[in-house]
Amino acid sequence: MMSLAVENLSFAYGPRKALDGLSFTLDPGSFTALLGPNGAGKSTLFSLLTRLFTTPQGRITIAGQDLARAPLKALAALGVVFQQPTLDLNLTTRRNLLYYAALHGLSGTTARDRAEEVLATLSLEDRADTPARSLSGGQRRRVELARALIHRPQVLLLDEPTVGLDAASRRAITDHAHQLARDGTTVLWATHLTDEVSPTDRCLILHRGHLLADATAAALAEGTTLTDRFLALIGASA
Ligand SMILES: Nc1ncnc2c1ncn2[C@@H]1O[C@H](COP(=O)(O)OP(=O)(O)OP(=O)(O)O)[C@@H](O)[C@H]1O
Image 1: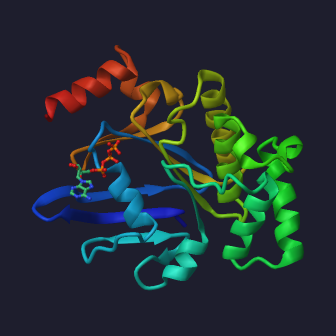
Image 2 (image 1 turned 45 degrees about the horizontal axis):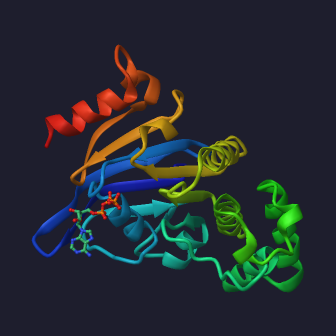
């Protein structure tokens, strides 16, 4: 069974088409980079996947559940790290995690166990009792990633999660996301930065609501670089 299936998905803001007949599937435990320039439609896709927007056109299936027909079951299998930071800066790392666990309906003991589990996964144990306000940008991002995992989602969406981070923090976040995929989570990572994509990553190139390519980064970079290939593809269709 696919972890995520997007079939013939379209969305428009008034007359402006943001997604146009988009289709792709993600296998369990895979890492996929969704690469697109500004305005490609990445955020619109994430808004549809998280049901912030709905559309009568096309179909989204998450962990075998149709998002339109069984939204609660489908969304229960989804974890999301949004582009804009959303931690409560007055709460400690652990409190932020427990608050989110409660939103997912996890009981006290389970929530506390899961908080410890995700703190360990993201190497944040020594920051558990630190107020989020005192964390570095990279640590805050890691807390958001930990929080997105607390209900053990099958599919994890990350929307440009490295915005504003330094090189070391960016590397830490990308490494964690790859490790999560190796451990079985299906990861979809939206970015406009080709240097965040590893050669073995599957790469979906989105431009103006269409998929222009679906291949490993290494295959796309053959005979050139991923950046040049990306620019050529989006330039050619501009
Ligand atoms: N609220 C809105 N109203 C009108 N048009 C919008 C709105 N949000 C996005 N768009 C348009 O839809 C298209 C897709 O935008 P979207 O934000 O999904 O792209 P993106 O790939 O996430 O870009 P970015 O990297 O800049 O966030 C663009 O042409 C954008 O101008």
